[in-house]
Amino acid sequence: LKGEGLLRLKCPYVASDGEGEINMLIRVIDELADGMRENDSSVVLQGIGIGVPGLVRPNSGIVALAVNLGWKNVPLRKIISDKFQLPTFVGNDTDVAACGEALLRNEKTINNLVYVTIGTGIGAGIIIDRKLYQGSHGWVGEIGHIQVVEDGLICKCGKRGCLETVAAGPAIAGKALQYIRAGYGTKILELVDGDLNQVTAEVVSTAASQGDEVGMAIISDAGALVGKTIAYFVNLLHPDVVVIGGGVAKAGEILFKAIRERIVETSLPMMARTVKIEPSILGDDVGAAGAAALAIRQFLSNPLAGAK
Ligand SMILES: [Zn+2]
Image (spheres, rainbow, N blue to C red):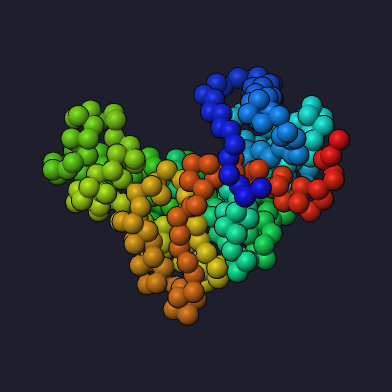
């Protein structure tokens, strides 16, 4: 109940017709449940939490749209709760991550929290007064598509200069390639043995953490633009804490320093002073732990609901 994982199962994603993916999800839940019972026969499953990369309708648990999965209007909560006869929670993956960070930080003083994930894309989950804010239609926190560069590069959303075009993983890797092609000496080349296809945001982060000037410049520039965007949140919502997660957040202090400096520079001083900017405490497990946290919260509020 403290959010510690008992068992972890990682499956490669195989694109299918939708039904195949749901069957795979059911198999994963079955295997996890069996595995936990094998480890400890007293384990009783109390609920199921699922984070989905897409638009999930609040209350109904229907996945309205998950582009990367090819899902449209999938009643996922009903399918899973009918199958397992257990309380089931389905949320957007970034939203459940925000819930996980808010619930598992165990700090009574956190009422308002923004969770920002920076990976292949950039998004945010928003907790206001200890509740997930989902807007009227379940689609909020699209900070990756806030314009930060006027007349910038075209984004996959069709607009120009979105934060994702300059600070998401692919943009960071692209920037590194530009530096390399322009003839800058950088450790990035060494880390990929000269194979430019292997240049990723992770490699750039590693180079930056080893003091490589090109890597540090790229991560700092990306951090400054993330900070500029978060500064809007600071002025608008004044959260207690902004948590940064996702693959790019592994760049560590170079990224966080740039983010904090830009927030101080561009938001109101008395607001910026009281906002903490922190790395995720849950790391790679943030989605799973957050989804589980939703089920845990329900169990704690009504412990007998799932009892058989
Ligand atoms: Zn965009």
